[in-house]
Length: 111
Image (tube, rainbow, N blue to C red; front, side):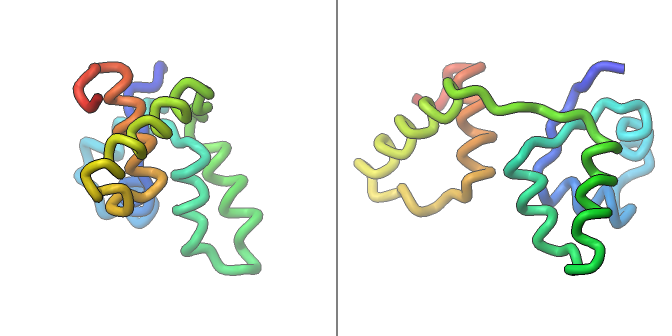
């Protein structure tokens, strides 16, 4: 059961609410979907105060965890500078930067 997908916060919320295609439910059930800290933080915005700790623990138990290495943050900082030169620095959330930074570093398409 190796992780194949990193869920963003909107996907994670749709999975939790069972608003995804049954094929995705099978992928989740196989343990092939992971989350990271920014996704967890964004997803927890919808939690109620009394249920916060329990919901967070449930998510941490249900999904594989992906740590974000320092090199990704360094790449994102460079992307921010590149975007600022084009007056586009305020159009992405932290999660968007992380997705673009991870994929851009991996694929070499954004810089």
